[in-house]
Image 1 (cartoon, one colour):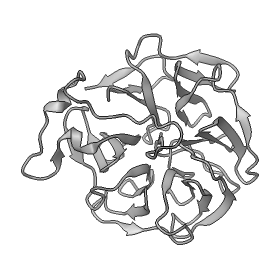
Image 2 (image 1 turned 60 degrees about the horizontal axis):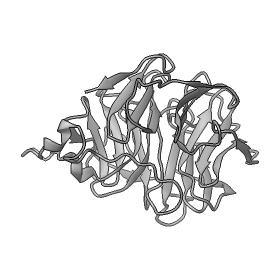
Image 3 (image 1 turned 180 degrees about the vertical axis):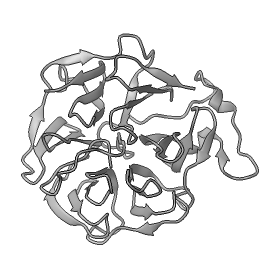
Image 4 (image 1 turned 90 degrees about the vertical axis):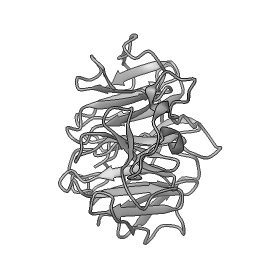
Length: 309
């Protein structure tokens, strides 16, 4: 499932599965991606070099990141990047998380909680599924535009059968068969950078150029939502209890109603958080990535944060 999705009449399951926090890769709108450290940034990852087995990689080859999750099979962090899908258990040593996606701009990833070996990945020009932990892939594009520019992807149920996809500058598509067939539900010719679903209210939240908006799935009637003093939203996710977490230009916040916000950073994370995710392992643990490519986990609604290193 995905970390922020869930909606629609067929959505009675609760849980979000993956993670996603995906700012757009193009030139439009807010592009708050995270970039792997360079020698000028405080991280030992810059010293890593590819090894002979071809799986360990130099982090600089990833370019920038679009989406983050926690692997159901290795416990490591998974990132969708400008050049493929990658994983790390310590944010220092990085490896390919899949074969067949090399050079592909991965904007969204979904994992099946009930079938951990199943992965769905979408991005610029593709939407694919793997049933063997990323070893082989097949297309899932029936009903989508030719070479779809998938900017976000959410799973609604634990089997990842019910899915929501946003195709850039086009609209929202739904699938109830694991992505084999898609139906367009509404036009949305804007640049949506992030989707998140409140599993209790079946409300879909989106981040785009003009701010934060929400709609009941199936009604597709959008209304503007408060984003804490009108600040720019860089990342948004919901946990299984419907609590929302926002990374904004002014800080890191938790809210249950988008009216009252609690600061969940207060110096615990020293750098700007630009990306968020929810672990599919418990649909509660929040994943945060900073603009210095540092990873943090919080299992308690942001009361404490532990850096992955």
